[in-house]
Image (cartoon, rainbow, N blue to C red; front, side, top):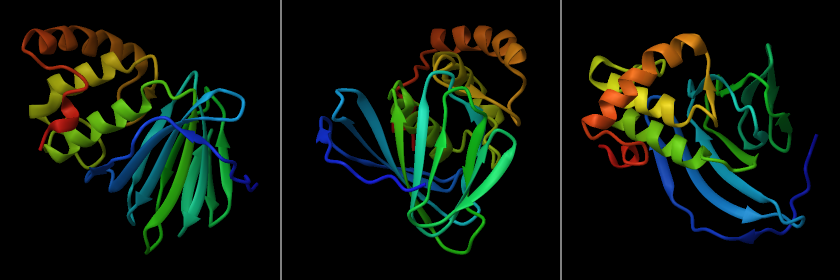
Length: 196
C-alpha cells in the first residue's frame, strides 16, 4: 500500500540521533495532520544488520514507508519485506519490529499516532547504546542495569518490550524496585539521551 503525502504543519524542529547497538539513525519531527491530530515523524536510516527487537505499543499506530533500500517488518508473527514506496501499517497493540537484512542502508519514514513519548524513548535508548550500557541484542550490560530499569519503568505505558527482555510480569517485579533505587542514585529518563 502506498500513502500519498499530504502537507503537514510542522510544530517542532528536527535533530539527528545515532544508535550504534541497533545500527539505526533517527531524525524526529512533530506535526499536526489535516484533521488536527498530532503526528510523530521518525525518519530512519537502518544499516545492514540493524533494526529493533519485538515490542508492542498498546495505544500507538505506526506507519512505516520505505523510501530507499529494503527493510523487513514484523507484524504479529510474520516478517514482511518492503521496498521503496511500500507502506506497512502496524495497528496499536500489535507485536512488531523492523530490521535490515540487505547490503545497503534502508531509509524508512515512520508516522506514529498519537506521538506519546516515542521520541524521548528512542533518544534515551540511543544514549544508553552510545554509552556502552546495552549489549548487541539490546539487553543492559552490568553497568547499565539501573538506567535500563528506569527506562523500562518510565516508558512502560508507551512500549512493552518483548524477548529478549524478560516477560512483562518479571519486568514489573524486577525493574520497579531497581528503578526506585536508580532514581534515588540520580538516574532519570530524559537524561540518558545526552550520554556518550
